[in-house]
Length: 142
Image (cartoon, rainbow, N blue to C red; front, side, top):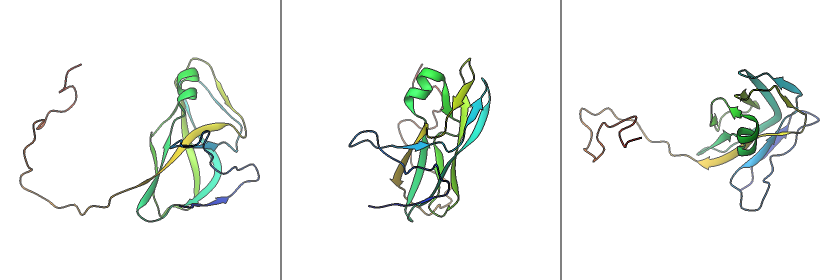
């Protein structure tokens, strides 16, 4: 599968996997931004994607940024629908104690392209029983 990517900014880079077989491809910043502790910023990647029908893009945090600096993707995973052709922007949140500087070209998130089902939603008076039933938050223990 090939995915068409439009570079919208002179500093934009194609998404790239760090290692063969990696599921996620790194997204890079085209902006220099400071994210103060406890705040979020919208960071541009300078990319537009032609995700085909039946697929979606999911923007995930980078584990190293999350663990070392507390940098997370606010709406993780961020969803990119197949019909969207605008710039992919990443909402980053700094849960750390220090300001975090995002440099141009820095890897800020990962992009995953996945096939998605498009079921027809049908109203039902009853649902089939399961072992779990209506057990929600905390239903399996701590």
